[in-house]
Image (cartoon, rainbow, N blue to C red):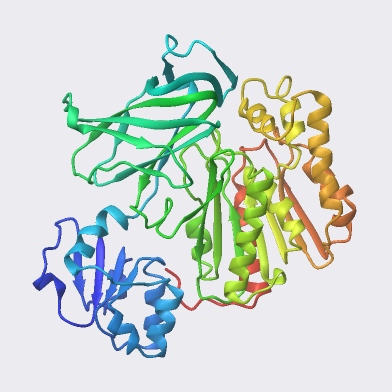
Amino acid sequence: MNVLQLGGDNWADQYQIPSDIKWEFNDYPVKDKKKQHRYDAVIFTGEPALTGDEWFRLQWLVDPYKVFYLPGVKAAAGKQLRLFLHQQKAAAIEQLPQDLIADLIPKYYTGQSGLRILPSMLLLNTRNFPGYQYVDGQHMEVDVQAEQDWQDLGTYKQSLFIDPHHLIKFWLEYQGTGLQIRLRVFIQPNGGDGEIKDCYYLPVTGEQEMELPIKAASDVRFGCIGLEVRGTGKLRLGVLHSRWSRAGQGAFLTGGERIVDPVKHEDIAYYFNPGDMRPPLNVYFSGARGLEGFEAYPLFRNTHAPSLLFTDMRLEIGQFYTGPVIEEQIKKVIRAKLAELGLTNHELIMNGISMGTYPAMKLGMQLSAYAINVAKPIANLGHVAERGRLQRPDEFATIFDIDAQIVPDLDEQSLRQLDEEFWRLASQTDLTETRLFISVMENDDYDDRALAGLQKNTAVQKAKQFTYKGFGGRHNDNPASIQWFAQRVAYLTGKEFKRSNAFNE
């Protein structure tokens, strides 16, 4: 980890610096630009004398939410430092220096990770809970009769690998009233059996993730996870999520936040990078992901414009950002970030690839965005499921679980009504000031009707611009489709909004 301290006295002479941290004191700007590198954190203990260009360069050498300052520094700061702290979402140092230094590695590390553990991996205690059924590939229903005492619901088959230097947190998707649930996590060292004292009980409550109360360590450890319940009623059990924790400093990335559906106990996440706070605001929806977390961060960061990333952690790979609660909250977050930046919908660009195209198009149309830029569009979720039997057998069974969360039945009528509703809502939008850029696969084996649906849609026909480009191959055959998408990001952000970046990383 590279940490830069600017101003004041060198903390490395006063405090203990972990061996995994390379501490640099007032070592910016670097005279030899070839030796310049990124910083995992920047700490201001005084105000450095930097030129405007040096402030600009520093902003793109450290991520937002990883800049810290002593309160007295900001109080006496000049205009450029104040702007820098504002754009970087900097935080005042409210703890002792040694405590901040100790928090750097476990809280402000680079990287992200999250795993899904499906209900099918739970070894159910059928002696205590004989009444159960699998609703679909991602949900199990259990009849619970445990009025007073906690009962062992079961233990997950796979042990949890706890990465060195990382904290762990959990999130459980479930529905049920009159029930209490808790996780039982037993920690074992690599090659050891563990001790009784290393068993932790984590109540499943509210909208906060469950932090595993162990310290980060340099050694590999494993966790054996069980579920216990108390009460009477029907429990609908979904996915258990295990994620790297930042101990309150963000979801996946430092500064990341979550949207929670309180009824279904499901969540998605978003990350806002203010950039240089000039238009446009790029919104991007991550595609299907096995590992949880955000994608395309470098692509949008390199534009230097504000960006807002979303990721859907539900089910096995995501749920296309569907659901009335989730969709409304996504639009609420977008509007709030536009207001924070002082921008309008005509300075909003909605982007997505594959699974991310569904919300980019649907919500982008509703918001009358300046532009909608998507690659490998999927608009007809019902049609994708219908193709599963003949065109793509045994390749994307998750679509049935996804559609089952949206429609009451998986019959032909319900699936077709699902797609008709998408196009009906699209027809009611105003796209007269919206530009659409669509990159399609000519032999797409997911949704081969998306482009035709856009061409026939009455609102799209009135759009300010409708440009599409086809590429040979099936859905995941040709990376040129993604490259064309990335070129549109650069064109829309740079040329359309007359931006120029003087500094390329």
